[in-house]
Each structure stands twice: as C-alpha cells, then as structure tokens.
Length: 258
Image (tube, rainbow, N blue to C red; front, side, top):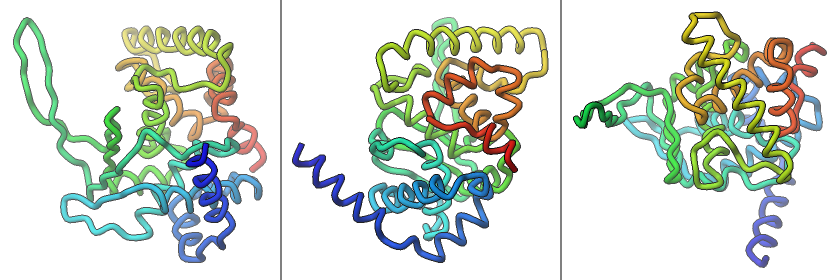
C-alpha cells in the first residue's frame, strides 16, 4: 500500500507537469492518430506519455542512438491503449529494446522428432520475460499511416497487456470476472472464423496473421480496432463490442465525427 501511494503521488506529479513543446511536435508529426482524440483524451494521453517516458527503460540496439523523438513516438502509441483507465502503464514490461530496422530473432521448430533452430527477421517482439523489442523504421511507418491496419507498437503492447497474468493466450486481465465468459465466447468464435477464412482464401478485415494462435489474434484485432474501427464494427460488431468494453474506447465513433 505504501509503495502504491508513493507511485501514485509520483505519477500525479508527472501528469501535472507541462507537456514539453518539443514532445508535442513529435506526437503531432509522427502519430497523426491523436487528431481523432477529444481534448480530455489528449490530456490523458499526454499524462501517460510523461509517466511512460519517466518509468520505462529504453535501450538503443544495433547502433541506434535513442532520442526523445524515439521515446515519445513509441510512448504515444503504446499509451493509446491505456486511455480512460487509471492503471499502471505496462507492469509486465521491464525494458524496451529499439533497433534501427528489422532485427533477427532466433526460432526453434520441432517436427517429426527433429528440432531445427534458425533466425527470422522481425519488426517487433514481446516476451513474457519483460522484454519488448521494436524496429524504429517500422514504428515510424506504422505510426504515420494510422489506417493501414498495421502498427507494430500497438501490436506488441497488446501482447504486453496479454502477458500481465503471466501467460500468452489472448485473454488479458479483464475488469470483472463475469466479463471472461463473453470474451472467450466471442473471441474464440471470431478466431475460428478467421481460421476458416484463411483456409478458404476469403478476404478479411482482420489480418490473417491473427490466425497464427489466440495471442496473435488478440494483438492483430487490437491493431484493427484502432486503425480500422468502422470496418471492424460493421463486419464484426460483437468483436468490436468486446474490445470497446476492454479498452473503454469507441474509436469508430471518433472516426465518424471527423
């Protein structure tokens, strides 16, 4: 309780500080999505950004020198997922590693009793061990096009939310126990539908990478929820409703007002 009180006091102080003009310029130039936010939501976002930058450890890798622009651009996108909720900003994340571009990640595949190790190029990666990795080139590309369905920061930080209960299963910590049954029913059905759509080569609003497993499905539909909200709501209303309840946001309504 004492720690929580001190943490809240520190965060309230950070929120109360003036948002730096240079940071505002980074956000408005690199994250045009913020133009859809109400003044109250933008103030909430600014506060979360200040907390995120102060509390989260970021490290440049592969020769990348971290700048305030990199830190703030990542923070602005990650904190979009937290608006309207008074909560810790990603307690499952200890360190964020940022590469200049796509990075190599080790892979292990087992088939027929044979284990094959290799490497795969990745744009981002979130582990249950508290480490999240991003490609700066792809962070910037996804941020500057807010309607292309793809945003590596939103995707990987959705995984971070999923990891908060210690597992990676597409079921983040929900606010009330009774919310788990409809969440499992709707997202399970929608996941199976995506598997069927992929098998039958049908076009979908949700990127078919979401058919990889339930954890990737949650991360992918979170991207769609923020980047293609109207299309998601029109084509998958129950899925949209579950995500809107969880994120406490209605991006389709925001987009319709513009």
